[in-house]
Amino acid sequence: MDSVHEIITEEEVQEIYSALGDGDLFESTERISQYLKEIENAPLNIAITGESGTGKSTFVNAIRGMDDEEEEGAARTGVVETTKEPMRYSHLKYPNVTVWDLPGIGTPNFVADDYLQKVEFSRYDFFIIISSERFKQNDILLAKEIQAMDKKFYFVRSKVDSDLLASQKRRKKTYNEQKILNEIRDHCIQSLKEGGIIEPQVFLLSCLELNKYDFLEMQETLEKELPKHKRHIFLISLPNISLSVLQKKREALRSGIWKVAALSCLVATVPIPGLSVAYDIGILVREMINYRKAFGLDEPSLEKLANMFGKEVSELKSVIKSPLVLQEINKELVASLLARGAAGGLMIAEYVVSNIPVVGSIAAGGISFGNTYWMLSEFLKEIAEDAVRVLTKALETPV
Image (tube, rainbow, N blue to C red):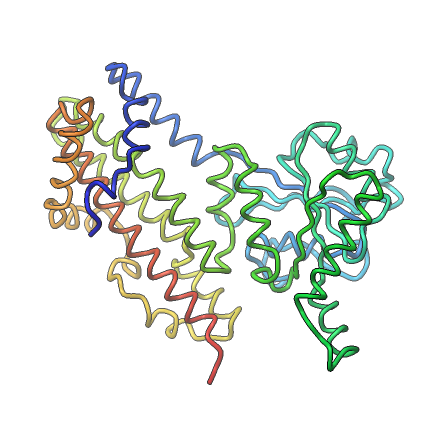
């Protein structure tokens, strides 16, 4: 296990001081509870727009980890405009994340002049403007209107896999994938600049293979530019399509452990026999189930991943090393783990006592903090490593 000093960072120590530093336990409990509610329940509304036929609905499905029309709740796709009005699609695992499939701008009922008013512009956190060719006048007009209203927007050039395939057929001897991608990107940026867009951000994607091309760059850009309380749910809700996404999820979940542990510490100060243990077990069950869901290691997610890559579920499960991942996570299991993990929890509690007096001065609180922190840190480490092994196995090509 990592050293205690690596487990609780200096930044986290300062955050704990900030949350608990006034000495008012009731107010501190309320403050940390509010932190957790903001993380768990922050609404995120993503608008997908552009002209008809650009692959908007396919992108809506892909960003939610769904196949076109093969699952209940998938956005309808087709070669003609299938979206007649703003369509709301909630994330299957995280219902507070909503992806909106907006009608194509320039369609008869949604002309550019009053497009934003008709689609209720104010409810979206950011816009993704999709084009499958060069960005056209309607795209540029829309971007300018969004910019004028002080909202974020990003350009996605879709269907680059089709462009690459066509180029490969035409240029059999001189085909160079990276050169062609650069040409597409430069052409898009140039057309947007000519239309008056300053420093446009263009991401090249294939909605059918979301893990390729510029998806990582787009994800990192959105992560930086979203407000902090929405950044977490954006990362956690992403489909597990690359190792970098799994690493980002691990970091996002790890950063919240101290809040759960601090709340456990405060509950331990309440003089009601058995309350602290009952609370710790309940919150550990909830958090561990959430970790498994975020990493896609629950049964439905494993089945979907196996189908996507043509594997057997048993093949993916064979690389899972943690005995906890495939078990039912319940109160009995967590209670037994708490008893076994007392040594690790006490090690962290010792660090808390010596380095965070506002927590450590309360013996029961320090121990409860340590147990909760240790348990979640260890489980997160194990499940994140298993998620990497499962995705690596899924991506393996037959020899």
